[in-house]
Amino acid sequence: MSAPFYITTPIYYVNDVPHIGHAYTTVAADFVARWRRLHGDDVVFLTGTDEHGLKVQRSAEAQGVTPREWADRTAQRFVEAWRGLDISNDDFIRTTEPRHYHAVQQFLQTVYDNGFIELGTYEGLYCVPCEAYYTEEELNDGRCPIHDRPVDHVTEENYFFRLSAFEDRLLEHYTKHPDAVQPESRRNEVLGFIRQGLRDFSMSRTSIDWGIPLPWDSSHVTYVWFDALFNYCTAVGYGADPARFERYWPVNYHLVGKDILRFHAVYWPAMLMAGGLEPPQCVFAHGWLLVGGEKMSKTRLNQIFPADLVADFGVDGVRYHFLADQRFGPDGDFSYESMVARYNADLANNFGNLASRVLNMAVSYLGGTVPEERANGPLAAAVPRAYEAMVGAMADLDLAGALAALWELIRNANAYIEASEPWKLYKAGETEAVAGVLGDCLETLRAVALLASPAIPRASADLWRRLGLDGSPESERLPDAINIGRLPAGRSLVKGDSLFPRKDA
Ligand SMILES: [Zn+2]
Image (cartoon, rainbow, N blue to C red; front, side, top):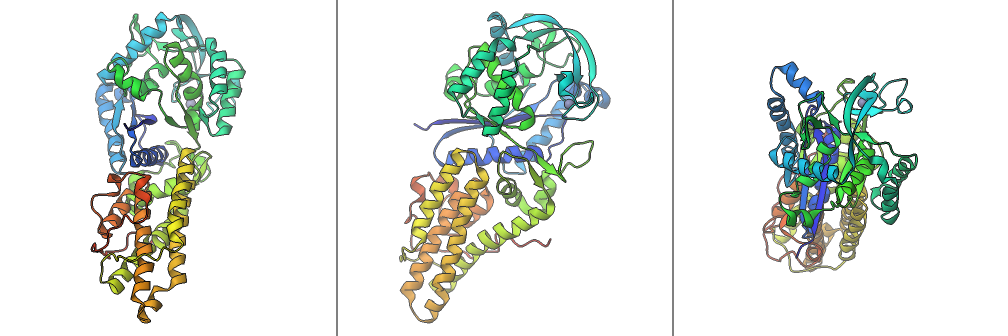
């Protein structure tokens, strides 16, 4: 029986245009999801779009269409962006779907019946793009700290969620589950926030129509968090399929940007507790992909779109860069120049070069078939070592570290070729020795294709075929599949074109 594994990206605001910030989180989640599938897990990988709220309503009005028409049109851009990056999500949730209305209303009624939602008057400073209230202290010179724009003063009758009732339970939860917020620095931030004291938050609006009505008072629609965050429960069957919900909840990982950490690691677990549900197993907050040292934003016009990079680097080139260029957690700087440099160094020179030189020699020296012989040289130990290092890194979501371990294996294989000089062995007529060395290298290439497949699925599948293997890396199951000796002798090898042609700077 395979283990359930549930991973999510945030749902992206449907008014946004998919940029590399969204792509960064989504590719990371995809890498983890593919890695778990390769280990035989029963994976649910969820992404989607957040489609309610004032901004969508306003944009639709400006375009002269209904909010639903506007959302239908704009959600499609995310679906297409992820298709263009080979994202293997199992589901794409839209918060305007009937399944979500049903689930949210059922959950709201439960939390209301449990006494954690009550009517009050809200007066506050409100940032429209954030759809969040701020206190004076949280603002920078009266401006939103995320958007750097003025906030509005708003007064209205709202329902409130009694977040303040959950301080102790949240602290207790995070003491018992020290890994429930990662990395460590983010956990400390969350604990600090809770210890400052939690304020009840407004969770309904009468001023907006575009949302899910409260089941006990339809003059209000639910506002932001009970709508947006609950997508994670809707998608695995809350209120519709109890057995399925039981299987996948609590979620293994919510991957989020650091700007929405507080909502995922404070509001969300409290909401779940209020509804009698378990908090997430882990909220993992990563940093921003900065462009020229600044967060991407529409107003600064520094957004970069994934499709433009795919045109230059291919799907695998883009995926690899996001995963390998910086540790998943801190902020990172994105630049086109560093992307070219890393592509050439890691993909063209290391990965691509290893594949082409081994396949070329095997075609020239061995007639293009996989030999029986194995030298059982240093690579026989380097392969399982690389795999074990990847397993350790992936358990910590150190995605760059996992790929670094694999690229260490690739460098070892290139070094082994330099050291054993098969071309000299061939000239000297030592055919068995040549076959042994290349046998080891071909086995290693198989392992590389397998282990790289969650990150760079296209090149890995291509290399798999060139090695004369059946199926695809995805049809294999780790850890067994890593064992040396899985490459059958006698198969026909294909040289093919360069897997990663070099790029000019
Ligand atoms: Zn804001």
